[in-house]
Image (spheres, rainbow, N blue to C red):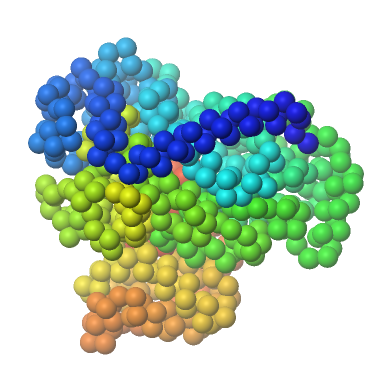
Length: 550
């Protein structure tokens, strides 16, 4: 139970966070001023660097000056050479004198080489401020979660080191380690758990640390991770009941555990008996039964909507709050309501521009400022931030759903370029996710793992990789839903320029093996990995059928 000191410190922290949220709310009324302030901070990070001199940024004073200085650019085209120099210890390549990154945030890129985003002290402050604003509104909406345990997934911040000894990894790991003590003491897992190499062992360890506590909510970026947490602890039900009874933590891959983790575990025979009773009653060991959860936090936008049914099956019919459009490069939105992926632009996190969707493919596309956007239109995000990224093309496509004062509400749709068009249909992941969800509802089946891949034939068609238990009628239902979602798809199907969807009934281990293969290929961590739902090239699923037979 929280102590009197806990309650006092929580009240102080709550009042501080409330002031942060009031400032955020006020900033939405005049984003022009806020964007100018952020631009000044961002340019200070690169002042005097080789990057600033190359692009003549010293004379930039306004956001209009910025547009004249250099075009919007991708990581590979505009930043990789400077960050590689940074990685080698040449900090003046991108940063102001005497500046040194705290770490490099690693993220998968569009090429085989991963992206490394320099995490400066100013960037950490901006990143944390966004989380504080998000968290305050979330707890204000769900006050019964205050001063209760938190199940939070975070990665390892020091998976590797730069040539100059700077850690490289997940920024969530750095944030977890530097969180305020009053907050960190409610985390069920120690940040050292991130050092457990095997993902399932790591997930089991986190759930083992939390299963005997009064967890109020669970939060990760990817909903698939939350589902895997539940699956792993259920599959290891005998082990977790025994560990709770004995005050131990048993891993399957014999990895050493830090003392900071094991010393917090105490024998709890009464809780073990209760877990046995719950498993006997329900046939499963599910978080919805052994915790009194208030809400979940994870992405639910774009292609991730289809996980909602499976989340409810494991965690119960509780509210889900999207954590916002958030990347290693920074925060874009801060959702303010449950069940919606839409949120106001985080106007204090970066200086934002937007490329209209119809201009994305142009060599030097026009950009619009946040207050120039139109409701219902789609845009690609460009940002200038305190990590040294100036007019950086993030590659995320968003739609304007509404407005708060002069600030747009944005919803993430899909990654730029994740569009399949084998016959001119321009099918997006967002359309596919909505169609598969509706198709499963109408077939009265649970939304399951799936992947759609284009196939070359006469005419070309799509192959649906899905769980072996789905009905044979699902492809036809999905086809009808895609026709409803996408007029171009319907036109190609009607004219026989696009063939029927064909089902490949995958083995129970197919998607696990597929994820492992893609992780190895991309070199990303399990927490960062998001398997695409839609492949865009004919040869991308080469070898998948053989994989499905294993």
